[in-house]
Length: 224
Image 1 (cartoon, rainbow, N blue to C red):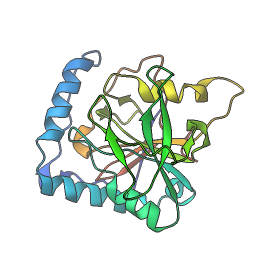
Image 2 (cartoon, helix red, strand yellow):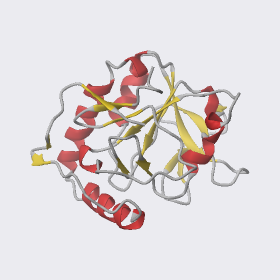
Image 3 (cartoon, rainbow, N blue to C red):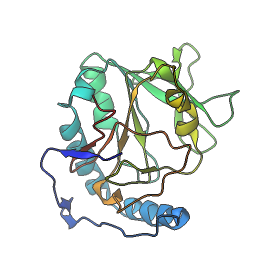
Image 4 (cartoon, one colour):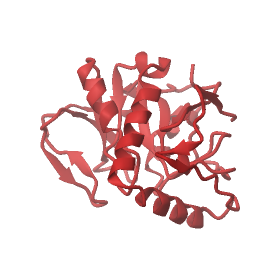
């Protein structure tokens, strides 16, 4: 799937030249290592600037404006922060849900309502999750828009995750004929995580697009 770029493309990231890596498409392990190292090397200031630019690029987009139930994530390992988007969603009357490791279904997620100040705990990966049993839990298909992290992406719509397959398994229902399509899936990333070309696996669930601190890359088939 080819992605089109919406808005003016920026060629510098937080004052530094952006990098377009040319990694052999099958070398997914090496690519993960390099991308994770690059995003972890960003300073706190660079991370803050990037997350605010990301918010600015996305909040006027139709995918955001039409969403009432938004799934998001809490950044770790140098991922671009979705916190400004979470705060804006809550301020504008949207409901925000965070992924929680499913207690029964292996390598899958469910989504729990998030409110500022709600009780949190760290899962086995060290990522915070809402833990208040009173918080509503919803299935993945019931959300309007899901903002998900990634390690690398390309202009053809490829996404490389951390390798656990949680999001692909959770949203695999959208690929079965005659089933609910579910929410639009939008990857969030630093612009420096863009690479030439990724080799897609058969189980990869396509994204409606990828939003970065520089641009919004759309998949015309899924972004409408």
